View (spheres, rainbow, N blue to C red):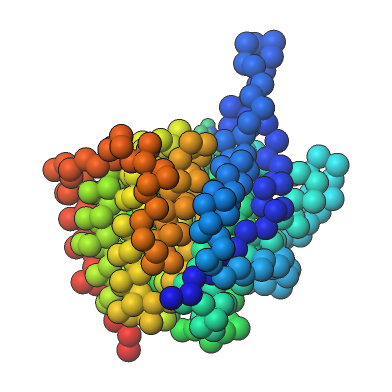
Length: 373
Ligand code: 9RB
Ligand code: ZN
């Protein structure tokens, strides 16, 4: 089995500036915080673990390139892309739209590279150069809607990649599974009226954005039942996430029968994440990966492209990422070297009744997912 891997050093150079979601006001007692939540170190540490563990040597390195303006325009409006290009020339950079998604001078170049990295990984999988792959890109993308960025996302990397697959590579049916703990509102919105793209988001109920991600959002006119949200209560761990895989995500994928599955892979549903309240373990992410691989095996010859989204635990993101990529490559579990974490048994809770009920509610949407004509 051949598995691709993508990282570029510039992804570790994303300049988010300091605090921002926690702004300072020194005369009123709010001390500046030098680290933005979405600082690049978590992802850089993940890349370094992938390489130092030896895992990286066994993967096929895919090279990132910047998405062109034309490629970005498939998912974003001209006004928006041009504004980012302009702000990127300013001495202090700019902000994608919500005041917390700042980027430094030259930031456009890195954001275009993140979108282009996702695109290149999807292309390599579609063409069959590799069976599956992991694009470790930064910044994340899934909150960005066509006309504005938000929630640390500038361009919607997965959407740019999926549009490329549709419009250039001739792929007809695409499924996007977003397991970042936050709702994939941007991706949902960009494909809202596209019946050929099934978007599924599993997330913590009303974490961020606080006013979307409900079961009732099911796709626009002409694309009804091609969007599924699985909002889960806080405290859901491996058992709940795997139950949602088995009862909702995998059955929906099998009905829709995509030609490729793209995963928006955040590690912020982890038990150590500071921005959410879920309890997934690194082994839980590896197991979710295996279930998606099995689904991809059944519907599309194993074609599975994973693209990095969020993840904010400096302690755990790298480990979640390494185990996920290790599973994607079909290697034996890596647990020995990292057992200090697994020994804690974090995240291995049994499913609770209120979690099972939320999953059951989402499972009722599956039978309406359209099958291929
Ligand atoms: C708050 C605001 C956020 C923004 C982004 C995230 C996570 C993103 C991610 C979480 C909370 C704004 C609290 C704006 O990881 N996506 O995958 N909160 N944003 N204003 N205020 C008061
Ligand atoms: Zn997130």
